[in-house]
Image (cartoon, rainbow, N blue to C red):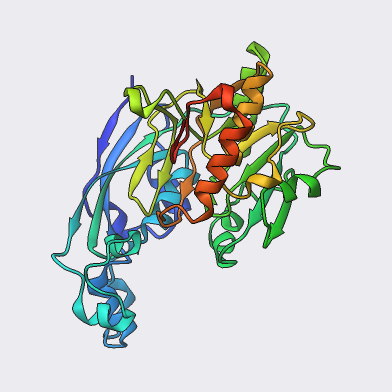
Length: 352
């Protein structure tokens, strides 16, 4: 029977790292076990303004309360085998005016970073994930294209222990014009699974073993063409849209999908696309950075292979941005490629 542990709001104020966390909470070890607590936000604007402007006083280390960024704390939870979920937050009333002026940002701007800086303390719940059993795991090939800020991969994917596992291969194309480029770079790989993954994801310890286990367990039941972390099916116009999978979106302070199981879906989000090496399911260069994920899912559907979302939680750290100018042209191209498949619901839009 699962247990729920309610820990005091000061519990994490005196824990320095994941090792200490694991030592303190080794009893929370059964699948489904949960605990609830809170932690102080290191990105709170009230504290940052004094730090950035050099007005904070030097105080003894023993008198400091440990503070975590939302990203750092959730990484610790995932690495120790827990799924985190925000319950609520203690917010400050307004963005500090002095900090707004210093950053040259208007106080009306509403983006993910400013939301984070308005919070003093996060209250959360964390639930223990199922154990992983993948005795035949021999590594995956990570396929990564970067086409934006070069620091994004450095502070996300490259900090993931699993990404750097010696059993895994890494193919990274910087300044790529489309995701198709990295598949060409990996054409001689002998790894059984290709994992096309965005550079703004953090994947926890043993994540590649988790996707390996689930992908091949499902493939034994009936052929899997492509798998991912977050998918949609149905149609928003008819009210039948359904989400599957689970990704923690830090900048939106929300969870994409809610499922703790493998599910069949229709279109996967391009943040992570998993295929068998040699499957022939690859991105088309002509689509660029948009609708290539939907196109790969249509390739699987057209060949009677399943599209599934896995239960392999990861952290997504990018800002939520409006679709760029070439989004619409890629949609038109996609619709011309698959007229018989329309309408196609994607995570971002309905192509009809």
